[in-house]
Length: 152
Length: 152
Length: 88
Length: 88
Image 1 (tube, rainbow over the protein chains, first blue to last red):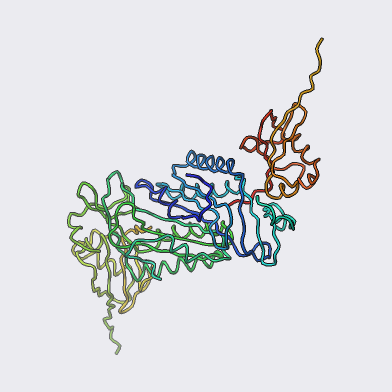
Image 2 (image 1 turned 60 degrees about the horizontal axis):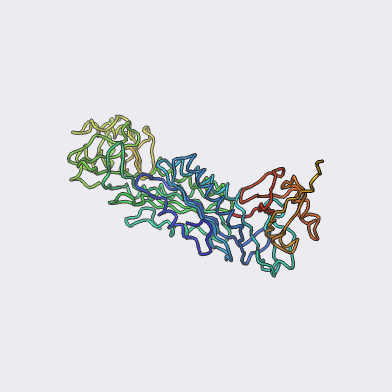
């Protein structure tokens, strides 16, 4: 099951993957595209990835979660063009004990943000475009007029 | 929207209720019926509730969550006959920041377990029946041979 | 010449789950001397046949809200005796 | 009589997102003197036209795994220069 998905994410499918009669608690996380960022109105965006490494990092994160907690986990990240409200990332973690389910779910989203090589280009209502930089004060890199002509 | 549901829970519906373009992070919890409890194999179970109070407690819990965090929340608990693998409780909490979403989701499931007047009668593979008592050492009350004849 | 009026309080007691099994019913009309409390209603129920299977201090609610054991109850209140909760 | 062999290491450098925009391409074949490190590959890229828009110590990966800046690289390695990650 690839962790990167070009099609809309379906949390129910991830839940079904991790559910079993032994695991009664399922914690999930869904990250959806917001309509604003840094004070600007977002129209749409594109996620691009260093795909083979992103798949590998997602698999390593899932393996680390299952090694650390008694959980079954599923993790998918959308790539390509997304609209406001679309799910960008979906995570499900099932365990006998809800502590483990919550902790594993939280671990996974934090590690995805920290380690998985995925980038986001936002298209704003004012026509500008920017690569999102969570480490920058404004959250974006300097707008690049030629960015729209390139495909990451 | 009643918090007690006689029909199967649909996490996707709860997620849709809380999702908005301003809230990018959605934490969810799903509690499903396990196939074992206290070393016994569970065939099926029944949830009964003190319905008007349970609705009120669920509404109060949701209100407390939205007062404490900047979140939108949804919460449903199944009542009636459930099979192994069925969802008993479903919670979704959406926020701009995932910290708040996770904390509110966790708060809600803990408060549901602590405050909402709902009871669970388990039917075991060996033919016995018991009311679940999370406060008892074995997790169940003494088996009552006549329990199957009563409807809570 | 003042007389000591014998006053009582009648409430509707609700029993659930294993407690309903214990007393063999789900609704009991309970009349206790005034001033009445949650605790005096519970004490009355525990004296009924099967009532010894209720704990001395069960979880209780009055008029749909969790209630302390020493909360006063008045005529017509709905007093619910709640077995250990098992939702979630 | 020993001779000092002039040895080099050639790697495939990958650029993504804003860094690809900066250098105007996504793949650069980089040849640097041995022994080579992630850092020496980055230094080479920063000397190219547009390379000054790369930070001195960007996040990097070698052969699909995150790599420290002082990690050695060998012939044929894939060295990825990663802009700030924005997944999740």
